[in-house]
Image (cartoon, rainbow, N blue to C red; front, top):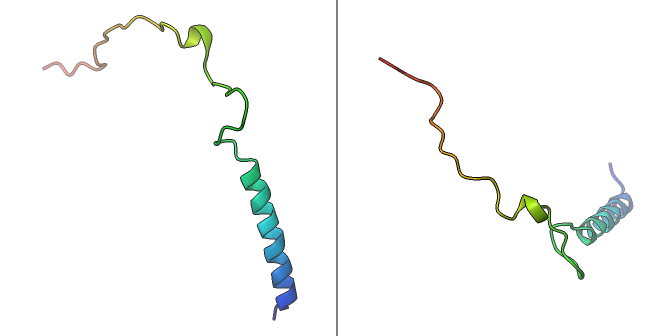
Amino acid sequence: MTDPKDNADLKAKMREALDRKKGNDKGVPKDGPVKEKAHGSEVVGGAPKVHRRKAGGGGS
């Protein structure tokens, strides 16, 4: 079947890859300024609120 040594080697490689992946986690802010996705005029103020009727008519 499979050699236990090969299995241990494969587990070691997988563990190393997982550690590298966890080290590159982009969801956790690192030290330094946080880059925000939206800034400037995109966030401040915004568009005026406009009421719109729901599409469709239905009518009798």
